[in-house]
Length: 464
Image (cartoon, rainbow, N blue to C red; front, side, top):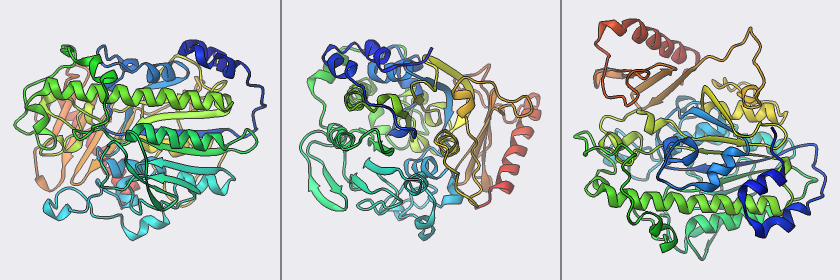
């Protein structure tokens, strides 16, 4: 079953949109549009469509129902800036040079954070560079986080970006095409408004690529109203698997002093973001662009919310971690007539696979000479069988500073270079909570050695 705009509207149950939706008559252009919606601090397990029973995300759940959802989508690096760079370049951190999150004060803790992208990042080929050259009108709204925040460049002709240091707030500052300004309203709503304004200027005659990049709410979020806070004022979150603060807790450990209050705020923030996703979807539909637009939703960092006694993502612990909550993020794809509705794919895919997939979907040549490590999952997203000679290999690989990770459909191996910490090996089939480290267990030596060999091959094939 394929999703039509009428079917999508009916599932959304939004009566006010019916006249606008049913009146759409404009023919679809031959070249599809692309909308990429990016979140922070959002693990897959936090969404209703991924099984969460207590955090309310109805709009994202409907988006998932309108297309294909990947149940096993993983980051290469559980750090925001590095993940964004991988998402837009299709290259891993040691290739594109952003190995961590960007911060102005990494020297306070030289083991994490990076002051700026390397000079070579200016010559990286981003997806926007490819699409602008192919005739797409490219726009970026929200958190850029890759250096030169006021003027991203890279083929984006329209930008509304947040300064790197600007928290999520009421009345945020923005750079509109490089010029500073101040907007009225909570940051997520302001970004949705700017993105919707871009849609208003588009037509079905010319294709566009729009990135809407929402920042993480974090503890400083002050735009929550009673509408969202009241959803969780008595919530106990008994099903979330909250644990006492871990001795290894690092970033965000202050949130664990009163985890229930912290989770209530985080849940309210997520529901507020979910409302913005719904508002943006309505803008896409009202403009008559829904049927010819590939919409992708993902996140560049995960979140624990008290699981493992941690709060945050990669640097929630010392040493940095690759737990599932940190690296397993949502991937939702909606494209009427191309992706089957209510589809769940079990294959292991990664953030590094996004550029090859989009290039195939939009019939745009991938960047030449960039040694991309990703692979296109378009065939499996559309529900078609893969050629027998080219089955999908369920293996994802990752890195963060001096640590490497390899995960297949049963085991996860974490190796820390320079003998910083003991290795980790988890049997995810029998220990999905990653409680028992089997690295030294001789019964698992074959799995450990196999994944270690995969990491060695990865380093040899994709050097820095």
